[in-house]
Image 1 (tube, each protein chain N blue to C red):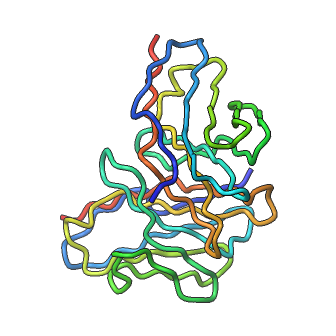
Image 2 (cartoon, rainbow over the protein chains, first blue to last red):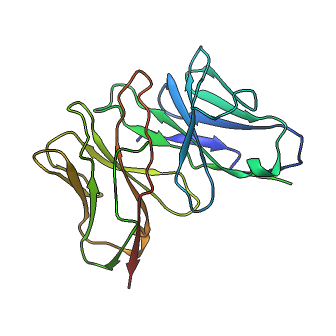
Length: 117
Length: 111
């Protein structure tokens, strides 16, 4: 079946630095990918929609200059957390839609734990 | 905002059927009902989806009421590994076609 993979699964970075998380679709081409953030014991919150070859669409309240999204190819989207602070520590999850599937099912990656110290 | 409401938690004995309800009274005619589950510290796992007919796959069955205002996910023989948070989601079909998560139901399967 369709597989979405994220890397790294866990990352620790120092406050003020930037960190990049990759999301890949392994056996299909994804023109659209989605990035979510999840804090402990809370539900997933959609951050942005990543569109191949164009600018990402950010949800209200999400800082586009802080969370840079690049979707340079049909199989790769990246999320860069710039000037990270401890409050950015969270579980980041990407997802991708399988085109042509009945109802266009969306599959999720394994998630990436970010800890900012 | 999520367009679904689910009970916050449910318990189920191992081997018994787990029936997870979901209300989506404002669902539109072309919106699907999707179910995902999230095991602790993992990304959500797709379970099943449907439009108006009941659906069954190797994981679960989905029963959608005739008026489509509610649905039930059925895990026929729950195991301890089915302990997770289950999310019922109505697919928001605009030009970005995104999934909006509600708070879900935390299912605890006990021995």
